[in-house]
Length: 356
Image (cartoon, rainbow, N blue to C red; front, side, top):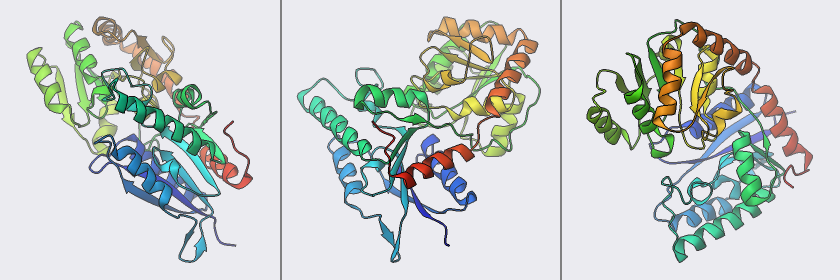
């Protein structure tokens, strides 16, 4: 009997390669590793102008993914807006996120939705359609409790969190607790790299910060570093290759990760697997599902002074960093792909919706 045929659905912004893109490919590999015949289906996406949002959603709704090469496709796994608009009798959603600018980011500096009649109408229609399309799923899951809470709040649907290990899990190794903190992130406003930089300006001592990643905010962040006189302490390393990231994790004192309402945050688990503690904030979202203040990391208020205090605590005590990092490793090593594949495919076979 041939393996069941499964499609992983990806909405991909050209030239952007972040957590959602990594997740889709990792899921693809995990399905194949568990004996499924799996392929990735990707459609380009852009969110401007605003009217394009519904057009991109309509594109997913119109395509037929029930058959290929005159053989049935047994299941599809949608990952983020608007992939779950697809029509399929065995549609399962493992939700990375919806169109966040229309959801919890609306009304914050991280959303371009304004309080205009047009934007209010678009937002209302998006939420209505999301509720309908996610409600069609045989199984509704999310990558973290933070995402599930949004679905419950805005769509009144229940999404079961399914945690997965980071892409480099098998290669990450521990090392010395060095004299620098590490931030790994796309350089976008919602990631709040500016908060990490401002905290470094207030932190006492010679602790350094290495920022690995690239994005639209790079020039603004470089200017901020120069204006604060941090050129010898904060380095924008750009996008790094896997081998360099593994080395950076191994040699860091801790991970400094200060996003706003992050969906999951792979780098939290990557740091833990390298036995490094994580400094994050009380409004970071996904990282707080793993980071416990004083247990495996430090959780500070989202202000430069509070984050600077947390930095100073670990900068002054390598043994504390090691103790917290060991506790983080014990938490992260329990997460595997087996449970993810099992639950997604069981839902696809069952015909019983997880949403309710």
